[in-house]
Amino acid sequence: MTIKDLPAALRPREKLLAHGAGALDDTELLALLLRTGIKGVGVLQLAERTLTAFGGMGGLLNASATDLKRIKGLGPAKRAELAAVLEIARRSMAQQLRTQPVFDTPGRVKDYLRLRLGAHRHEVFAVLFLDAQHQLLLMEEMFRGTLTQTSVYPREVVKRALETNAAAVVFAHNHPSGAAEPSRADEFLTQTLKSALALVDVRVLDHLVVGRTDVASFAERGLL
Image 1: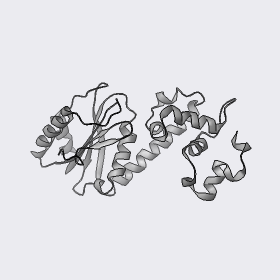
Image 2: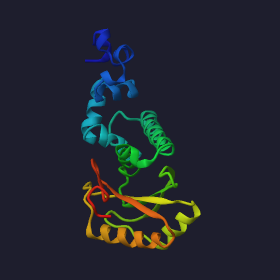
Image 3: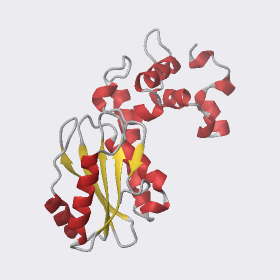
Image 4: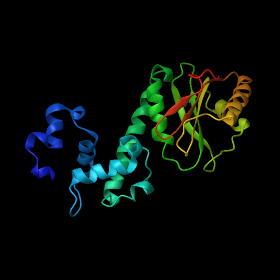
């Protein structure tokens, strides 16, 4: 069934205008972005196939441009629109983190990191540099590695913290395997970085491990 075959009240656009975006399910929201299907496949079916391929909306939001190419019917224009929506979400979250202490909204920080780091196929170690009120100054992806490990240099982290005049930091890295479970090496690295930054009076507030669907917090687990 195509959108044109649906009663007007059930069409995604009309439904959104009448009841708000929250009234739409994931398939309907994605169909609105895609706008058209392909020959023999309506836009709702294309949206459903896309979500199924990525394991739902969370997986789609973490998909890279290369990942999107796998879906028949997502041409350059549609992929560009999805990438633009994803970048808008990232920038909106970053702006919010700059205007209020990051730990006032821990869920938003995790969502932001999933959007920033979740799509990487290799490990990335990032640092969120915070001011004295724990508002975000900037986030920087400082080190990139392989599928399973990244070399992190404490001297470079300390140097960058001083350059940004940060009062505190939050570390984050992704696990391309998908599991957001801190390793012993992650714990050792965190303590090494914490000791180095303490020498220049910069606090380590948390270390977040980003998996495919979850984010683990060192602070919440009492590992700091």
